[in-house]
Length: 457
Image 1 (cartoon, helix red, strand yellow):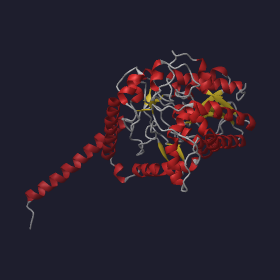
Image 2 (cartoon, one colour):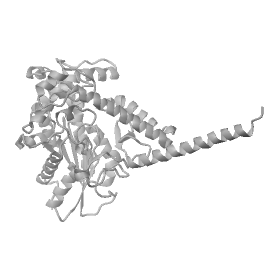
Image 3 (tube, one colour):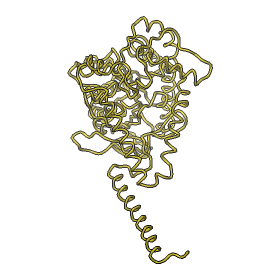
């Protein structure tokens, strides 16, 4: 069967038309991705797989940034994954004081939790990363440069979303030590609540996070994402999912300033999206029944602080460990009205089932995976008991004691905040801070560094 010229022409037209459409779509997708700062790489997440129990911050990652007055530049990590207001080199001159900040998202500079609309329903705050100058890092640099004008102050931020204490220790070993910091300030607490009273810290990260990060790595380098159109479609799908999810969450908790109405509207077990209201009461007797078990299981976490400190001491690096501010901790500022209304919101509702009571020791099945799973169920309420009782009754004192014994420094931000009145808006949610909260925390860290003589003329 022979094709006539008309048929051949039609086929040719279809091929040419398809090619033109393809390149038009790729071109338009390229321009849109360029506008969204998504053209630099195929990585679409701010963390990437690095070993089994530690992650490194993705280099050249362009964060969604809150810029005060809509001025300044976006937060973009450098080629090492650091955030700083100037290039960070491996070498530094003798007059440079280099400080690295380590910890979780609060130290990184995150605003209100963007994964749940529950807190915004009480009072909205910026959900993106604060630009450098209004983050803890920026305010700390400004404070110290003012106190020591003859020194060149560098404050480098290498905190990360969801990073835990042992991951910060490993991040120092694998990435930070080469840059010869003079001081490392590590602010932790909230992300480690599950570890403080659980044990098996390294095993948990490998068991639960390695498959997730491996899948993300595979997705990020899938051949299909070489096509800009595929990347744009994937991005739009994620944004649509986030929009639908946030809309559903907004319907769960309507905007209100009345905590009782909030609980009456939402009930005690609405959804797994983060909008659960925890009405469980963990009294002091409940705490006393499991206190010995909590002390025993917190020993591994306390040991990690010591290990971290001795690694730094071997490198002749000063170490300040800061217990971060946490909304639900009794040792705190005088809470503002909106902060009190945020207290019942249970940010960990994917793991929590309000109303559980915990007596005696946690279950100990034979398999590691089973033990971790069952201990996570047991920890559903133990994290609340940790905040209400264990931190102030035992843990903070234990940290201070071992800091004195082993030659590093400890600062309790919760105690430092006790002089703040209810007019000071500090929290945006369970542990993240407002711009003024960042400034307060930075200046208190600066004061501690000077008072403990970690910095001298």
